[in-house]
Image 1 (tube, protein in one colour):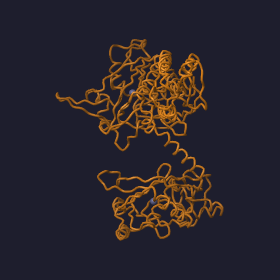
Image 2 (cartoon, rainbow, N blue to C red):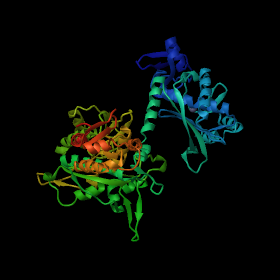
Image 3 (spheres, rainbow, N blue to C red):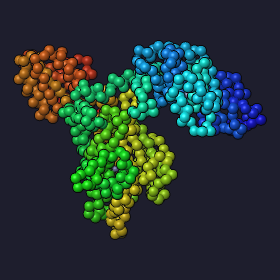
Image 4 (cartoon, rainbow, N blue to C red):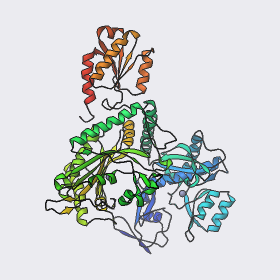
Length: 639
Ligand SMILES: [Zn+2]
Ligand SMILES: [Zn+2]
C-alpha cells in the first residue's frame, strides 16, 4: 500500500500505482465526478498519473481558480485539433495558456483571417461535446521523432531537440489527435466547458525572433463560466472604445514617428494637458514643502559607475560618445543627479527633511515589441522626488507622502487604490535594524491612514522596502503608478552625510517617490479612464465658442475674450459651416463645453451652452455662464 496526505491532514491508504482519480473515487463518487485535476506535492498534475508514496494531494474541482490554467491549456489543444481537421497539412508550433486565455501558432501558406475564426470555433465546440479523454503517454525520443517527421511537423522536431537528454518525452492524446506536451490536462475535452471565444489572429515569429519564419497565431479568451467570459468581453469592447491611441488622434493630442520609436510628439492640445498635470503637481508639491531642481540629461559614465547603473542597467541605457572620446549616457533615472545636488555644501540636521523634486525626462531602451502608445515608451517624464531625512523623521515623511498620493489620485477621479508593501529579500544590504525601521515606517503610514494593503514578503529591492500604488480604472483594469521606496544604497555609494546635533556626520535616510510615475503613461491612463471626456479642469480646450451666423462674429469675439479673462481655455469657431457640423467636430475632440451664438444671442447678449453629458442646451446671460464655468473649472474630482 501507499499513503497520501490530504489538505485537512488526513491520510489515505491506496494500492500502489493508484492515481488521483482513484483517490477521488475512494473518497466519494460525487467528489470523483467534480474533480478535474490534482495538486500533487505542490505541482499541478493530471488525474491519471500514479501518485508517489507519501505525496500531499489536493483534488481540484473545475470551479477552482487553479483549474482555469488547465481549461485554457486544454483549449489550445482543442484549437489545434480543430485547425488540423479543417485544414489538413497545417503545421503546429506551440500553444500555451496565457493571461485571460490561450493561443496556438500554426504554419500555413495563407495566414488565418478573422473570417476563419467562427468556423474553427464551431469545430472546437464539436470536439468539446465529444468529451474525448486526454491520455498521457511516455514515448522514446526516437519514436517521437519518427512520428513527427512522418507527419511533417517540423516545429515539433525542434521542440523535441530542446528536451534535455534523460527527460521523458510525453504525449497527450485526445481521440485520434495528439500533441507533444508536458501537461497536465483535465479528464476529457468536455471539462473545458463553453466559456471561451476566439478573438483575433496575428503574425508571430517562431520563438519571438524576427530572424525566424513568421507563423500565424490564433488567440482566444477563456474563463470558468459564461458570466466571467461576458464580463471580460464587455471590458475588451470598452477598452477598445477608450484606446488612448485612437482618442489621442481624434482629440489631436499627440502622435508617434518611426524616427523616434517610443517617444511622443506632443501637439498643442496634448502639451497643454501635459503642462496642466505638471502645474497641478508643482502646486501640490510646493504646498508640501518640496523644492524643485533640474539635473542634466546627459552625464559621464563615471557618474553611472558610482551609482551602479553602468554595471547593472547599461543594456537599458542610451549611450553617447563625443569627439573627445568621452562616454556619456542619457539619464535613465534622476536619482544620481540629485545625489550630486545634495552633496553640494554641508548639510545639517536642520536642513532635513530636504525634498528635491524634478520633472525629469528619462530615457530607457525598451524592446520595440514592448512599446504601446503612451503606456509603454522609451522616453518619459517622471514627477520624481528624493526625500533626505533623519532616521527619526522617516515615519512622518512616509505618512506625508502617503497622504499626498492618495489625495492627488482622488482629485483625478481614482478612488479605488490598492497598495502593495514589498519587504526585505534574501540577499540585501543594510542592517536588520534599518530594515525593521523602514518597513515599520511604511506600514505605519498605511495603518495611520487606515488604508488596507497587501504585503509581498521578500519582494523588496536589495537596497530597501517599497510601496506601490495601483489604480483601478473605470472599467476595472489595474495600473501601477506611484511608488515610495526607501534606499540604504545610494547615500552610501555617494558618501552623502549630514551633521547630527552631536556634531557627528551620519548618512541621511533617502526616499525615492513618484506619484504619477510617468506623466506620459499617466496621461494615457487618464484618457482611457475618462474615455477622453476629461473633467473641465483638465480639458486642454475647455470651451469652444461657435457661431451659427456671421452676424454673431463680434459677439463671439467678446464672449471668448470675457471667458479668457476669467482664466478659461477657449477657442472660437467662426467658420462658415452648419452649427450641427461644428458641434459634431468639437464633440469628437471631446471639448466639454460648447457655446453656440446666433442672431438672438447677439441681440440679447446671451449664450447658449451645450455641456458634454447634459441632455439639453441652456441659454443664459454671459455673466451667469462665466460664474458657473469658472466654478466648475476650479473643482478637482475630489474637491
Ligand atoms: Zn499542451
Ligand atoms: Zn530615485
